[in-house]
Image (cartoon, rainbow, N blue to C red; front, side, top):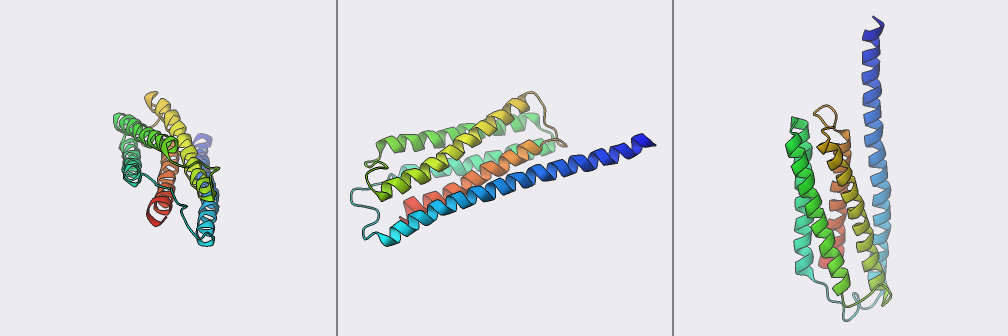
Amino acid sequence: MGGMEAAPAAERRERLWQTNIYLAMLLFLYSEAFLFGSLFWAYYFLKFKTPVWPPEGVELETGLMSASTAVLLLSSGTMQASIMAIRRGSQRGLVLGLVATMLLGSAFLGIKVWDWFHLPFRPWDHAYGSVFYTLTAFHGAHVLGGLLVLAALLVRALRRLFSPDRHLAVEVGGLYWHFVDLVWLGVFSTLFIIR
């Protein structure tokens, strides 16, 4: 009888643990949203207080960044596909989805780094340069962090440590990756569309 009572208690502890991890990630993402919100606030404050914004000579590669935005949004789709795959029990789908997401995320980051080295201004040239590089570098750091999370998930997936019943880490990793993509939409809209 004691064994039967222990099983439901263990299941309750497991559900509580999963809820706490998911909640911890949500709280972390809320704090990150405040960080990016303060960067957006700084951008728009400077925009409305500066007579010419962006400064003369600032030309951004909108076409290339639009393409990289599409790449990053596609990576959200592949991440979601990997989550759906492991929910169905497909180890192969999980691995393929994670690899595709990492390749797309790496391509996005590579394009962003290339862009930084080819822009006609630097962070120290003016306030626009400072806020532009800060916004894009913070986002780039979050993409890099997401790629590291995905790499860790891939290692675990290759060891077949996930199943339809045990894949919380994939769900939480996906939540982070979707957040990174959502933030980029704000950064892209601010810097390349609204300007």
